[in-house]
Length: 466
Ligand code: SAH
Ligand code: SF4
Ligand code: F3S
Image 1 (spheres, rainbow, N blue to C red):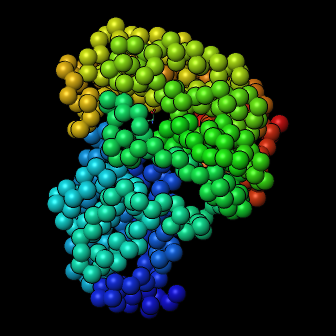
Image 2: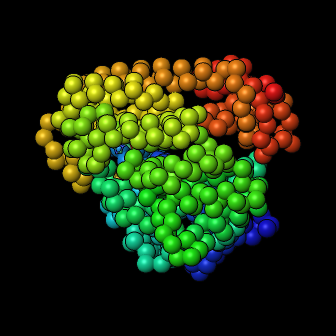
Image 3: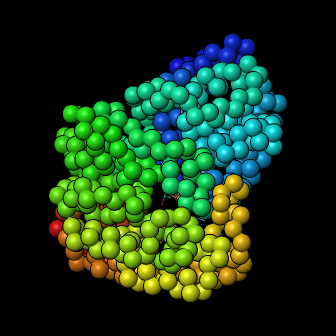
């Protein structure tokens, strides 16, 4: 690709609408791991259309925001980013250069047309189920159309995405996400996901295995299977029998090159026996489980439509721990759900003390338009939410530090992922998803080595080769 063609093609394309090689795309990803995965697949789709990814927004001919709708703050970020992009577009257009703006992800799905109305500089709005049609949408936008494509596509987007990966920066990736399930039928009363991602859909086994093999071929050692409700994944096995996530994990464990498996996010109601057996049997299934509970109060859990109580959650944790004693737990919590009393909140603290988390994410309830929670009475004051959040986070942080401290002196397997802060150091992942610094050579990236944890730092651990 010569500079000359790269310079010429955007102008030529304004009239023809044809894809042109050499354009650059900057993708900004908000929200969950599913969006991270989707961004990489959009990058693949755009690479097939001649776009090269860039980390520098100023170089980009296309800026794509892959958005999140989960809390009010997350959605607001999008509009402030779009305001800045509008300025950039004005500047570029005055220089006679192409500059396109795309909005993808869950805000795109939830607000569709509204985005184009509020921010007319947006060229393309594309939903999480239609992003395989992104090159086509861009082509239409170049001809002057303002494209909003947020249908739940009838075709399977995965079948339409290219099966090669776009280059992802300098370092070779040793870990990768792989979406196996999308959407949610649970309808927790606080949550927008069933509306932004649609109902639960599982990808077929053969498609998942093919993608896992391709990633393994590219040097990936650790796969994290993704789904809004990943443990609701189900599909037909090779003999037509019904498979659940546990069966899928046993199958993926056979792929040469893949050394570690993880999955996220799970719903407590979908942790079946087979999945717990997989934790018992598969050493390569990492002993770390993100199992959100949201609240420890049965009254609040019921109002949230979580469809389990605190006792059932704790009993489930006990069973999982019996199967895999070294498992570390992570969770999500919401404080200040409508009607939450001090006693309800105390019950959450009690559950946290009982379970003991290695890691956790906690949020103030954010009322989302269109969800049943928004219409409930007794919304909790913002100050009360803040105060409860601070108390919960204090407890969770103490548990997190305690867990990290308990790792000191242990000998563990470390998957070396990327260069560390200092030359001669690499950062690796522990089985419990902690970042660990160790002296190692760049050529060892992708290796799994045995190390002894020597100390804890603010956000990572330190280790020496064992
Ligand atoms: N499918 C996952 C969670 C997806 S959303 C599950 O069922 O656990 C990730 C987390 O965001 C949720 O677990 C919840 O803790 C938080 N969250 C979702 N909606 C929220 C809201 N309206 N306000 C505050 N936090 C919310
Ligand atoms: Fe949202 Fe509940 Fe579905 Fe999780 S299970 S995505 S919290 S509705
Ligand atoms: Fe956000 Fe959508 Fe994920 S709302 S958390 S990006 S599924």
